[in-house]
Image (tube, rainbow, N blue to C red; front, top):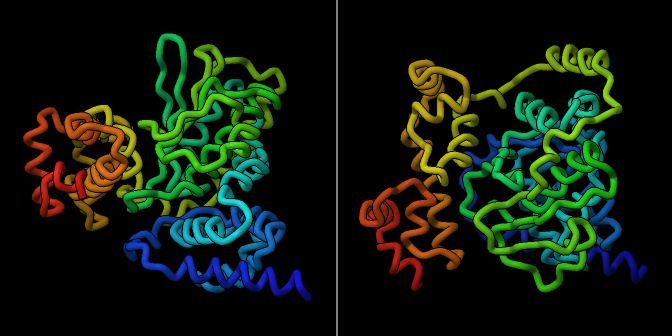
Length: 358
């Protein structure tokens, strides 16, 4: 009886946290992810004394999501559940605890194809090719440097702050793919998060190792330069071909919307100063004219999408207090600080320096 009362109290606190205004726009409901994360949520939340069924019902999700990993659910609902539960339960690292249990099979229909890729580079390319089957939100990009390779993870959500819990879950899932290719005990050289360090990083060190950097410019993993192309001796080329043929039979659905692809691309390219329609279309492998036509068919406009991402990132960087205004201007694609300041004032009604002080 005492345990039931405690579980009831924790669940009520989580629901109360989920009720607090978050400013998540309605359009975020169109960004969807697979429900496999909720099965992991159920096990972890129950172990922490919460009632996952009540939490799902509160955010408008059918409890059947807990048993069916391949349903499509709104990303914002998953984010709300994770953030609220972390504030009310015994652990404030719920997303990371879920990510710690992530296995290759949790990539669903892509699992067999990923398993039989010759290198991590090829596995990541297949993940990019078929990401519409997994998530509208998660984007992984490869940045190669002379000594290291950076796997940058971004979440396209429409929110200024995607949330610590969803991001730690995503980076931990990426880690599981790396370990499949590089060895079960493999550790990254360093792990970066844009959010501030929590009060305790013991779970982070257990999952990722000791080399952690919080308040960083990006979220993701740092690998050795040669690890991206280390050969996987266990691949079966015939099995990979079979898996790809099977995947091609899967319905593509709304997740293939071009506007979603543009948002994902701009999230990655904007900090590099590459945000023109020519540069984005090149990244997506289509001509600028084709991209413009496809966006028009969806009722979307390229510059509006760029501006949405720019607003989101500028606000996050300014509020983070880790960058000067000049640095923020460069990270959101402005060559001149004065131009950024004018744009910021038009968007938010105050100067970036005033916003930073407030």
